[in-house]
Amino acid sequence: MADAKFDPRNFISPPFRACPKCGKESFGILTISGNSYSRRCRDCWHMVNRLPLPKLNKKVIYLDQYVVSNLMKLDNPVYQRDGFTKEKTFYQELRDLLMELRRMQLIVCPDSASHVSESRISPFNAELKKTYENLSSGITFQSFESISSLQIGELARAWSDGREPVFRFNARDVLHKDPNEWSERYYITFQDNPFIVPNEIKTARAYMHTHIARLFRDVWSKEARTFQYWNDLERKGYQGHLGAAVVKSRRERMESMLAYQPGVEPSLEELGKVLPSAAEALLAGLEHIMRFPRDGSMRTPDETAKLERSFGEANRIAEAPFVKLQSLMYAAIAMRAAAGQKEPPNEGMTTDIETIAYLLPYCDAMLMDNDCRALLRNIPTALRPAEVERVYSLNSRTEFLDYLRSIRASITPEHLDALREVYGEEYI
Image (cartoon, rainbow, N blue to C red; front, side, top):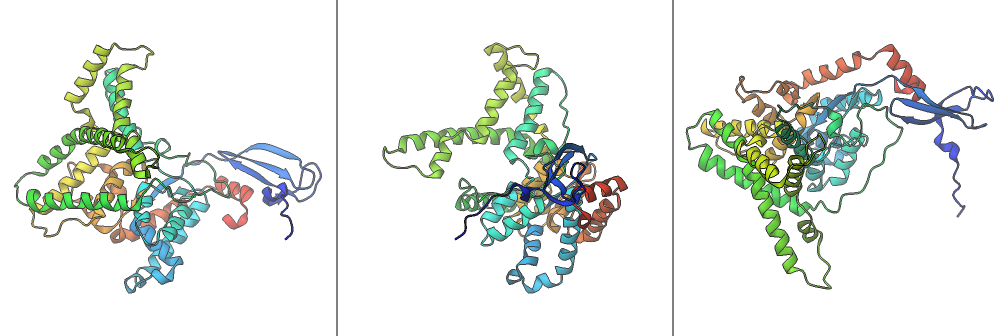
């Protein structure tokens, strides 16, 4: 077997231009980074760094797992069923448009924790993972716990500063990399995270579904309450949910430590219980914010405790945007139950609600399933957030495709020239 030889020239790619030093047509693209690129000659190694590229303002498009699943079927006919046939034309057109816009640096389609968890419990995990990573090109939303900490942290800082909170909803704040960078020709993917255990995901989903189904049958369908009542109850109860999560984590840690046996390797599940939970990390972050104001000073323990207590008594966490949005959606389900809907939401609805609550404010558009979009539109007009209009579904597929085409139509001559310069004519 011949030895493999590494040739650095392989990292210099088309389109090639005449080298300004040696004159050969071998002056190719070496790197693309941020808003600039570099060229290098494959023959004489002459290099020019940091050539400028136009600044980008890519649209952030989120695709629900239901959409990812159907896009996956295009490349895997064995998973196609009879019901898919009538939708196949739409999904083919959708994928072509998305890939064209992604290639032209006009959109990003980030993947999220919801894609990962829902794929991990599917028998088609590998195919689904390949599909959503191909669409996202390595651009991923931060965990929902991180977004929660970001929003609640702003509420705490505002309370500490004596001002009103300001939420920017800048996608860059909740993505692992800047979406407005020009894309490299490649991206790196990793194997499945071993700390994400499919059985734990299934158990958590089943627990949540059982809880929601019980509320649907035994509470929401029987109590004659207003939408505002259920909305306020959900929103103001989130702080108690966090407190209960902290207590649960501390109890499980103690139980795990007491059950430890020397010489016996603990499971990943047991190791996870020993580490601080997301709720505990959030609580520690709030304590730090209250203790250390942004002016560089440090409050006394009594001053800190007083500020923490007043923050809790005011229940400022109820003002977090993700809490408000998910509370509206659960209140809409409660009103459906009261109106006579017989069946509770399916197991996937809680994941959809969580995904929308955390990600919608940072997206320019979301393509979700019909029932999820309908639930958002069940929110009374006076309470319905403006960003609900950014949510599309199969029932509004024509409007969504028109929206994507409008993005393509907005491209400028300067942008087209830059595409030709760094990627080549085939990108146009």
